[in-house]
Image 1 (cartoon, rainbow, N blue to C red):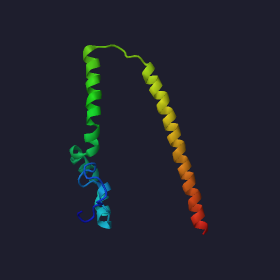
Image 2: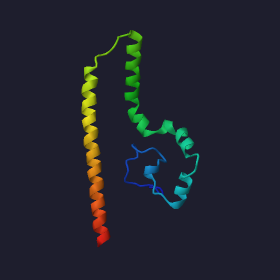
Image 3: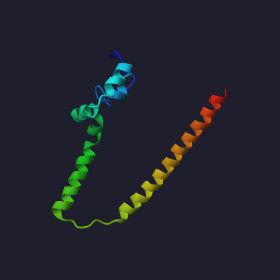
Image 4: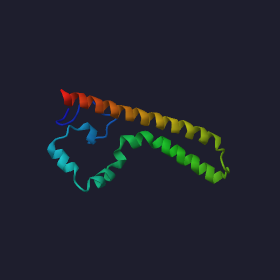
Length: 116
């Protein structure tokens, strides 16, 4: 592995030069704080491994929307969306409660460390 790169990460799932695969030094942080860093990210968006993994889903959704629009299928039934919204709401509530309990546990452990 080259200097400054974590060799334990799967190279197929990590974009080349992506920040998660680097071991950061003070020089890297100074360069990362540059005000044009977002433009540099836009320049390399086409190399994104995340975009490559979700692009079939995006193209499928766009194709479905175009088919509905082109064939004028009319309004779709709302019952499936209602069921999805309910389950998604419950999932978000459980995830939020889990995150809150983790924060509470971390605060408790930090208090234990500080008292020692």
